[in-house]
Image (cartoon, rainbow, N blue to C red):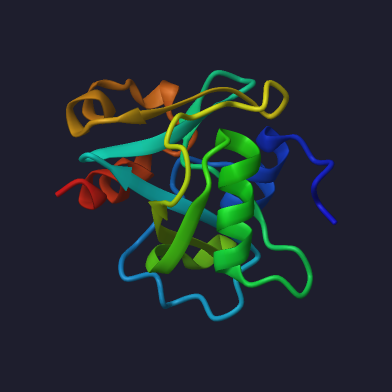
Length: 152
């Protein structure tokens, strides 16, 4: 239903337009998520995508009607990063925007392939690289803490 929306719009609508949208552990505080994403870790690195506006975030987007948040997170990760994953339990959530990020594992080829439309780049970042990103390079700078928690 929302597949036609650009990633930038989805991020603004689903995850909020301000940098104050945090993703707080444990992730179970949202009972009917409107948006979902994947926190995918491989070799102590987190998968992130770069939107057409140049800012980085985890892959994610709207939950379609009748779709579970875990299915949406897996679908969005494949669409935006070209990586097949399995989604596990929620790792964090943003109550204000009804967003849930699931713990995800790579089950296919781990080489990210951005779609060239919604995402211009996709790659795995280690903790040092995430810390080094300036706030303006992240779609939601306050979510940096959630990203780093996944790498602990």
